[in-house]
Image (cartoon, rainbow, N blue to C red; front, side, top):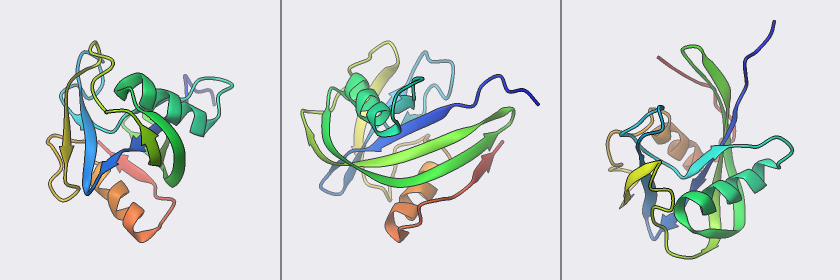
Length: 142
């Protein structure tokens, strides 16, 4: 069996008190209009944590100095399949904002109990796993 690709996607939870930072995707061709965590694809030869730090900086302007793994979420979505790695930025410098305006058109801070909508279907589950300490969950959506 051959694969066209098997992406490793990294996401970073940025917290301010009890609020989570989300970016609204635009003009990407995937989940445009959805509020999502900062993140993106791991590059060949790059460590997973390094990819998370890089993507967070590119998208938000925030320099993460301490990163904690939260969970791994293998996913299947139609013909897409890959791995999501979620990290929590425990220490960071800067003020989060939109640093890639060609990919995002809004950003918000929101409570995990009242996430901006629409958001990825897996995000509430990921936040529950963060609370419970579960590090692995498989996710499938249509």
